[in-house]
Image (cartoon, rainbow, N blue to C red; front, side, top):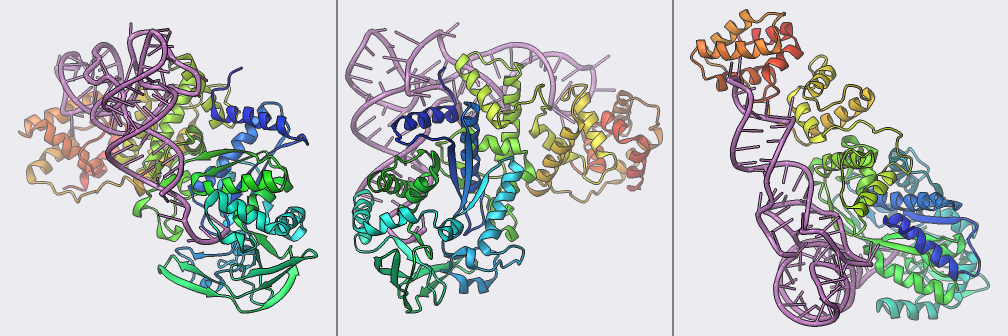
Length: 530
RNA sequence: GGGCCCGUAGCUCAGUCUGGCUAGAGCACCGGCCUUUUAAGCCGGGUGGCGCGGGUUCGAAUCCCGUCGGGCCCGCCA
């Protein structure tokens, strides 16, 4: 059958690659990098989600598969992230797994960072096998590949030059040793390689940065000269993937276009030096974060998956990452309600409530929905409710009001935005998302309300006439009549009512709103305006 | 200097890979419903011919070449 969704198409490609392999795959493995040097943002989460989706796609095709999330925790620290203590500057240049966790809750800085992403992944519903790159080196998993590359480092240098026009590796070994004296990794250079050992000298310097202060920090080597095992260092990125792909028998890895060059080089290294057909790739455009000042500074102003999940469901998050691979996507908080509604629309299409005349498009949207549901779509159509509308409602019904949930539910039921039977826990979650959004993003000013004597008088008359047994319609009429009798334009009086009750100029139909909130409570509120 | 992506209705976009129904959706907008608000409701309306110019084809938004506009990445390092 013809495949119409990108995940399924990639499985076809993975199977095509399989044809070329001498050694066939028992297990189909997808991989993604798990950042460990900075705060993991939504783009890092995108890597993981996409790799996981291909893992699911492979499984769906009846193939045995695995997904490895590999933490690049032997990379050196280059920048002190915003919101981190200044003394972290001393650790610039050290592998992140050798740096103490500045917050003291994990074994290392690197572990702290990757755990943030892993937490996000768990919340998004992504399962993975965690692999520490530091571990791979320590255990010598890639020894064979490293030796091959070091032995022929000049050839590697030529390939790098050919693919990227960078000449430096025709002279240098593409490998960093962790200095046994000072512990830094980016200040060393190899002078010789023989008998599985590398000779090195720690005399290079490189430029780090403190993102908090914007200050650049020059880090210099300690001058130490020594000889050590290849397990005490790491390959340069331009060749590291290749070694990892071969050693771990990776079948698929997706990348952002920012590292396109590195991927090209690694593919070539893989083919020409390691005799291994590189994994299938998917190159995607990046998420451009324009989170603005809304994101709290304590989170380092980074748009993390956790931030999204405060305002939107895991489904909406997955949709963001699944929908398209190749747009530069501006991701900000305003994308969240959009995606909430889009998930609902997909559900409507999936369950046949929305007609899509183009068969192909319908099939595509249905498949997209299945992936959004991690290929386990619900049996029956879940709750769908316009998230924008919900945000409007949450905006006018103050958070502290009693029976807020019931009020919102009744408004939705009354306006037929909800079916008779629906999943209450789901609605509660959605109200929470919408409320968070209103509070943090769409907050409206609540002016101090001042009423003139005429308004006060009318309001007081209205209060006297208002009784428990009146229907919503009768209350609506009463407001209208009270306005007329007091020579106030109905329009203005309604406005007054809304401002008194909700603090905003408009709201749900006043009669129903008062009925729903309760006459008694309304009288209390009005009493404050004597 | 090298490369990627986008340009379809007022806005956000789908459709482009695998050319072919009368080019679609949502929002906005316009008209109507509502004898009592400023409609979160209901009914009805598509207002563009797919950035531009060539080419291929019986046929192009879809393929090819060129061009303009917008966005982004690489050209330190990882």
